[in-house]
Length: 362
Image (cartoon, rainbow, N blue to C red):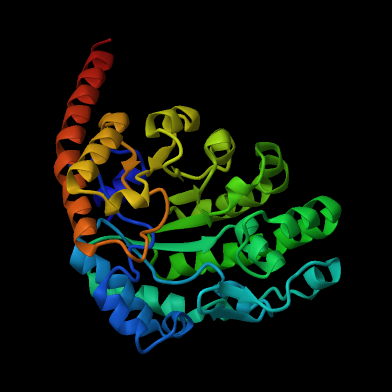
């Protein structure tokens, strides 16, 4: 597995072609997933290891992606913290008792590791066994700010007003909340690695709701703590956020090995901001998968051209696959990235070999 093209790209090593996997690659766009959802809720799947493993494997079989991301939800750990979590039809996640006071923060439990979504650990073991080394397994968790936003808002939000109000008006309680979430998240991810995850991704999906200054001062320290505490495990850490084009340098300061970017920034500009010592993941707009194939191909070529064949590019969407996406277009995308990426990385490898040769002569 150490030589898989995905893990090599995470380490900015040369690959035979550009690796590709997709956020939310297991989901409603797949008929086999819909068949399972017809008899099981999202929480049912997440709480039954065999179902979570099966859903994780579905896109690997159909698409031929270069990594399998374990099927879960970023809010699963909050249940073990004493939070009542529901998924309401048409509303998404709902938290009936939002955390909006210092007293509510103090009541949050710091569960033992084995209490935090234990079915996910078993699902990872099942997936590793089923894959037999075919592709690596990615574990993941929500980053502290994004999870906090759900806890405070009580669900999804457009403006994150309650979250920002709490962050600005209750700085000590905010730090206590971040401390608790960082601790629980670290335990959760360490346990996923112990179960067999070979990479982990932190989803700070709503980080773009903050200004660069607020993210740097009030969020980054906790993300850095998580990354630092995962470092001894020796697995690559990916940090993902949306709407973060204005502070990619701040995300890179987290110490994460890979920075995942959305489609609101050119990949070349994002990599320049992140710096050459980090790998990059991204960054096709998920809506492009509804376009004619000639347009999909045009945009894939553009992204690969911006990557320039340099080691360290992992192709992905700028966010998750949308439920209505034609499954055949997703298959086409993966095949196309592998086809076009082979030529791109070959050219990049030749160029790097030439540079290495000149350096060696000197």
